[in-house]
Image (cartoon, rainbow, N blue to C red; front, side):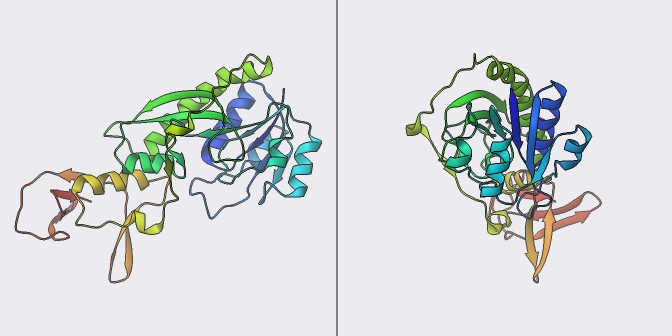
Length: 278
């Protein structure tokens, strides 16, 4: 089975490496040399050169030149793992098996942008790992493989990223043979149950000390590395926050944003409910 691979983030590199490990026939890779969009960007060309895989830098995946390049490779299937742009019809129709995408959520719930970040910010207890056949919609195609991923109170963006990635790599190892021998199954999504997450803005990452300590803690753990970090501003200077601890207290007469103490373990700030250590 001839595979063309599209991707440009850390998980893309892990997935491509897994495909190499299980001796898949990868006939071409499209990636980005750099990105001001993905904080977890990875250029896949070094891995391709190491394994003698043809590679193309592709700022526009739907450009005529890129579509022609992929078409000339005659892929049986296209994998698109870690590419935050919609795939258009002409590219979707190249491979007989279609284009398989990846979304780190339990589709049809939580389609859209930044699923790992939003799941932590909203304090969810569960996420997922879903591979699906892409169509012209956003995360709306038939499901190929789906697994649940639990979210603990101790998880942050980094640990959840690794949890989902580990689950997804196991799925790849399981479903690639079914694509090769055409024993795979397709499971249509129930669109009536679909929900959508919007693109996160810079202001979504700004700490408002009137929030509860628990809400601020979820914001910080959702935006910590490999992402951009939550932040607050003092006198037009931005301060990033990478880790927090909720401090339970019942202080009634101190306003939010008041610094309660500072020592070698960090600063404790009064919030709308309880306090938080930075």
